[in-house]
Length: 145
Image (tube, rainbow, N blue to C red; front, side, top):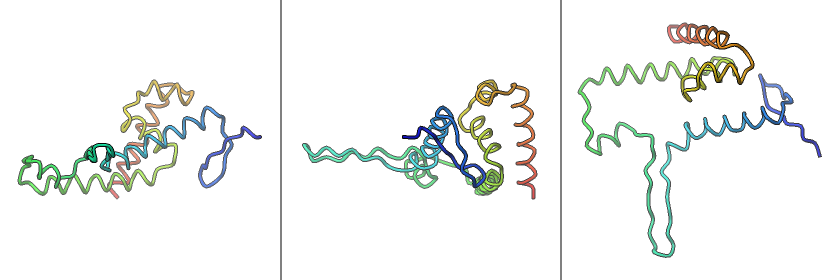
């Protein structure tokens, strides 16, 4: 039985260590949690008492918040501008390389420190800082196009 682990990188299959493989699986699960799991209701079914409990999704839509009585300003343009920027950011993130997207996701979506990322990638904190700044400049250019 082979203990070799593989992952896809730039369309190619690459052999990775057990540690890196486990980390990639864990990262993929975290991303799936944020992108999918938070957007679904959870149901607890009690067959003994014939009761279904609904745990609402944690991601809130504007419609759902309005139904709950939340009041928002009448400024649709602010909401639309924010939505447009979010879409543009998502499109720009999709154009980054896997390494660039991983770094930005870890730093900004998962609030990891530059020091943690430097240790993980076995580089200096300054290298992470410089990469981050370069990627942010690249994102700005992609959004402004």
